[in-house]
Image 1: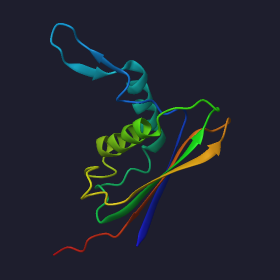
Image 2: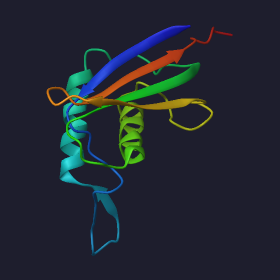
Image 3: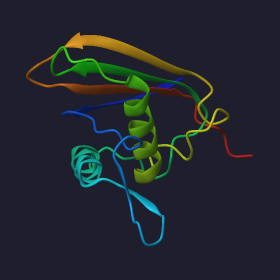
Image 4: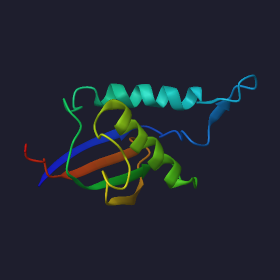
Length: 128
């Protein structure tokens, strides 16, 4: 088994709750806030993104460090992070076959460096 770990620092924006709809076409797009978060997260992880997506994933653990005591929907932030990892190529897909176990933890308050610690346990598949 191998482990791939990184931390996203900052307030994680929800992709789902902040979409903008074009009234003319009816298509919706992520908000500017989410797009900015995605760019910042990409910059934070640029030097650790693997050459090819990780395979043989056994478990993904997301430990959230909160900036304040405000309550928010954790699952929306999970979707943002999982979609981000697919977008930048850390994982191939975030479906239940590719990620059979997803563990969420609320790790408490961290006013200085809120964000999420991501740990991926995987077993690289051997070439057939």
